[in-house]
Image (cartoon, rainbow, N blue to C red; front, top):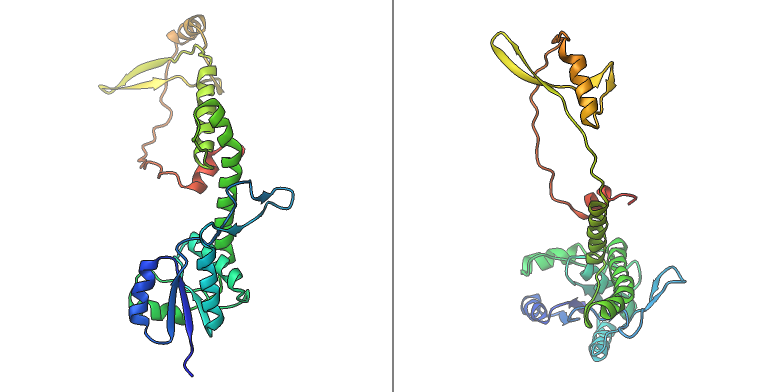
Length: 267
């Protein structure tokens, strides 16, 4: 008897397309996005138990999930073909648990183009659900909830009802506020620089005074500046060394999450 395989994708349109070329022996169902999520009516995270998320079936998805479970019971093999990203991996993980597939089941497939060749190749390379990707999605979702549910009410009371705070934007606003406070608290300090225009062999160049007796010089007022000029007035200046170097400078690349974190103080 031919093997009966159930393939689960996210999009109903994708399910229809796959059904056309997978042929007999395959049935394709769509989860239509996530089937489980954190509840909307409460925080849904047990902060006292290692931040354990409390997932529930998304409202309106109960009947669809039952259909998927029923089809999975009839199938000899179930393949989870949700999108090839961390959200898709999390959906596959929720489906795996709902259908009660074994943790080590090679039920996960992914493809980047909807062609018969790409899908058939993906089926041959079925793998386990990637726990690292799932954890990455869960961490992102939990942070969204922790930040949003705690900060949004403050926005409603201080700014306007209906606003929401995100895990990224909220931190960026904090960084901007901290930097603005540094600017406002900045105390201007007077400083002077001393430069001399030197000439030799009909060529001239500027030299800036940076140290004195091998100690860095710091001129903070006009009186100190006048004293330095007086001391230098009758000095003999000698060029002891000339170095020529080429330096190539490139602009820093745009920030990504990791490089932004590296630049943050106390990150």
